[in-house]
Image 1 (cartoon, rainbow, N blue to C red):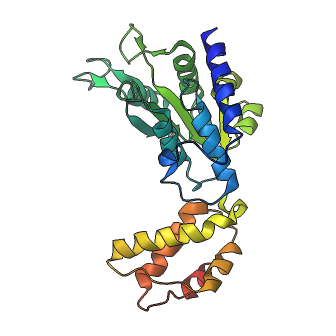
Image 2: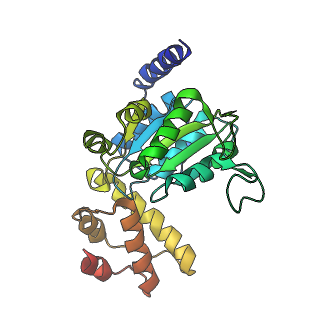
Image 3: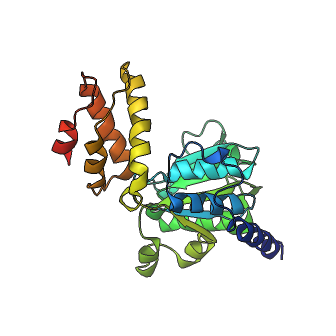
Length: 276
């Protein structure tokens, strides 16, 4: 009943947000450089559901800024606790349990003192699990228990501890396809999918290329101790012709490489053309 009531409140906030052009408070999203209407719609959705406790699934191609969106989500929630990010790709079930839940002294060979897990450090805040699509089945079951029971067991303990951390997960994989082939548990999938946002790829929001270019030029110039170079107008046209499989991360790498080699007033398009 409490969960249903919370969902009703979230739906009400979301309905009101649809009438606005953007979020009421743009500050939590200030680190995300965009002119895209699709991204602003995600900001509104994020702001509407941020005060709740239900888990959130963020999907999108690699390099689109899923962790950046999760951090914005945490800032919009107003939670007093910390934002804790954990990449779970390639970890086995023991490492997953020890990293998230911690352990008691003597829980296993070498455990000479107790350890707090990241879920404890995220108390009152947000726990962000990246690359959730690569989580083992045993770890999936443990995560499902955390989401359903709001409690967890440190390794070596038989006394469950409560948690109030908001869980946000992210993946670049197609979770529905993994579910269909049995690689991802259906019950966990539906639990995580209470709220879902998919970040569009850079090629689908070409209006963001120029402001991102300017932003990365400033960052690169500062990193290399140079003045920010100007860029020819044809550079933007050239970049918009590229598919950007690596998305924003790929554009940043291109700009930093070009600025690192730059020694004139106007930025050369040579490196960009060679790359593309």
